[in-house]
Image 1: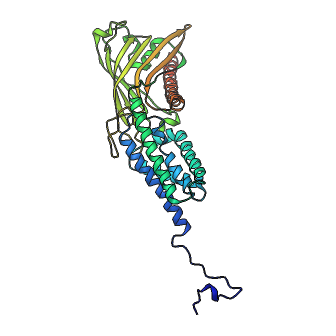
Image 2: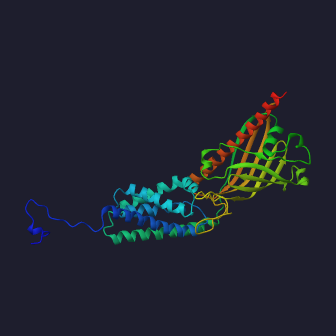
Image 3: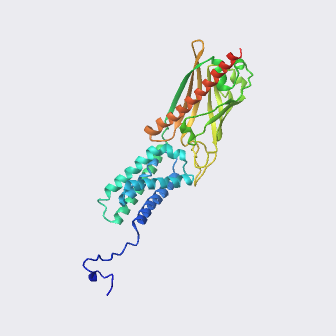
Amino acid sequence: MAPDDPSQVEPNQKPHIQQPTILAPARWTVGVMFAVIITWVLYCVISASTDQFSIVFFSFPIVLGFIIGVFALKRPYLSTSVAFVCLFAIIILTYHEGITCFVMSLPVLAPITFIGTFVGNTLRRWLKTRNQKAVSVIVLVVLYRGAHHVDQQFRRNQPHPRHQVSAEILIKGKATQVFAAITGVAPEQQGLSAITPAPVELAGPWPTVMYLGLPIPQRLQITKINQKQLNQENKAGNKGELLLTFNHGVAHAQITEWSPPHDFAFTLDGIKLNDPPHFNTRLSGDNHFGFKTEKSEDWLTFGRLAYQLEMIGQDHVKLTRITEFTRHLFPDFYFGPLQEWVITQGSKRLLQQIQSKVEQQKDTSLSQR
């Protein structure tokens, strides 16, 4: 008599039920990893062919959420959260994106992922078999890849939006003192043709967002003066060169406006950054990581950076900093205000440092009298 034969079981004895070969936790893990791998492969494909970072590019995690939703894993939204963390841990650890990119894009990536979960979890009511669910995933991947290709072709010839942000501060002092704090040219040299600029040192603290791997300015140094152009205030041309030093890189710039003590402006020639590991910011093409060369200036391209000084009364100066840039990230409703806000916060902190330097020097000179 076979002990496992249900017909021979005592009336009060429950029959032995054979356990499934794959336990529930193992099936859940396999399901999550399957979704992560499929989305990871899709990301590698579109990343290798992307030169326009639009909303379609940032929508790739919708596939992750859709797979989890359509295959009806337990607690689909919790499962999606776990898969989301695993996916971007892989992307960051393989140097495809940096922590900075992930944090900045999180408000776009997360909702799109959960929309995919919602759609997949809703459609599974009409998808009865595993094959039907698999076909729905394939169709979504093909449609997404096609939409990405069309979007890239469309945007390739479209002009990118240009932005101008400004910040201003009122400083107690003379315009020549403020101009000296910005350029390193002493007040007594500002009207001369021969000048010897000193380096301008910058210190923190900076806005918290800048510590997420963004380049933090530390020094400005005018390295070359074009005397002929310098004396022609109203004519365009290269009036000199300067070097901007950051915490992990440098930038070279050309001086385009020089009218002491009222106007000072320059444009960047190029940025060379050595980003910390896993914090690649896509702001420089000097070094690259991962499976493809990072394209220079993927986020934005800086244009004119200018300082304007205006005397207010006898002993106050209104200092305005203007930053012009071209944005390369979409959608507009999110990345436009975000980049303007980050640049504005950095500009305000920079102006506060100039204010402190000028007013401390004035206090020091008064105490020495």
